[in-house]
Image (tube, rainbow, N blue to C red; front, side, top):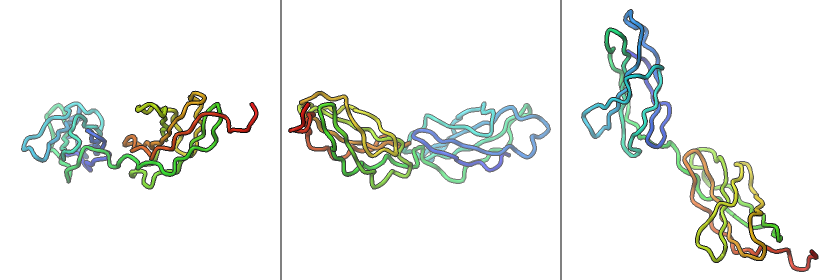
Length: 201
């Protein structure tokens, strides 16, 4: 039988498995591995693949809130070897959540060319490091938010120039990690895109 069958990763609708080759191939070369899955609410096993050519396989097309068991056997010209089953059922979903909302979003420097927005990182990154921040804006008279720019994970400020002079805008920031995009921050007060009063043009 194959050895050390384990779940190496889970994502939404997908579970990745890995195992080690059997110590003996019974005198005939292993052609493929057969991988089966079973929803724990069901009695029957379902074939995931009978053609895995390496000792690893990602089973996709799973329901993210269901729990699954997996079993694997090696196949050679003589037939299939004994199956080995995973120890415990796993859910086909990300091990972590999306980040919480960024904090303390404020608009700093404003002039007729644009505005600088700054923020602090969320209290929780959901268990997976933040990969980017998404800065959104909307015209005060509009209800729909647009993406202004995407900032790097280490950034805490962004200068937005894709705005129209003398219009008022509201800004907010979201954090993103491997699980997806988190909830938006509280929106800023409306800011008018113009040079500070009293400065000469």
